[in-house]
Image (tube, rainbow, N blue to C red; front, side, top):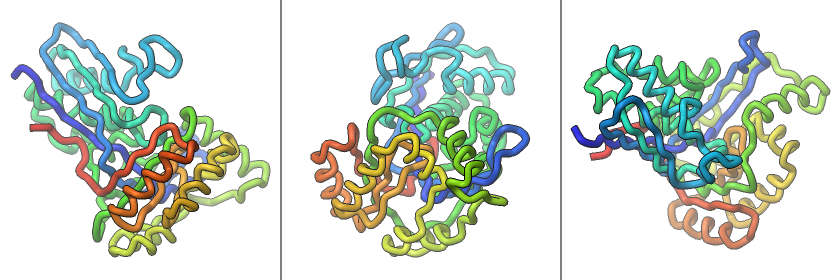
Length: 308
């Protein structure tokens, strides 16, 4: 087998309820993930030992600030080591990641890369890992990696790594606008804790339930979905990056049914009424000068898969 290619999608959190900080340093979450039609691709070729190259959207100059690492600190490299260790095979492969998911944008691009790497390497090495085994490895790599394997729509609990599929009644159309530089996920969670401790946000006993958005997703009304969107990390993201308020306002002024910060940001996810409305919305937002990147996407789409 000369080359194996897999791809995995970006995600949008259409609901993100965050509970108090746990003793293990994570927060208890109730989140609803939606996989959307923006993909990173991982290619695997023969190699001695492991090597990794990264190209594409927002990867930066190798070794420079903001660059995506091409060494063991990259989740793709760690995914390869974990799978090789579990399967008892030599960790020999040359891996290449081609990115279209913007980096540090709250879209789980790194998690998508890791999930695609697990799928591609399982086929390349012939390890024939059970889906449950790949999901267990994914959970060790990061909270969003299991969903990147599953795709579609799913409820995430625990720290987000426990995923259960959710039935979706139809396809929704979105415009993703990335405003400014990336936001650190730990910093946004830290700001949430600070705001709750100071009284700027109410303390909570547990994460907000996801039932309203799950019910909206089972239907086909984009208006119902717009009214159910929620993200507990939006307030701290706005506190750290006040310019995101302008980005959210630009999306709704341009005709979005609703807009929210996706995950820890800085991506703004704007819900459109249909595909044609999403195309118009993307064109208008590309011209307002608020976003450095604008993408029209739809979902749900499948998780990490081999590319024929």
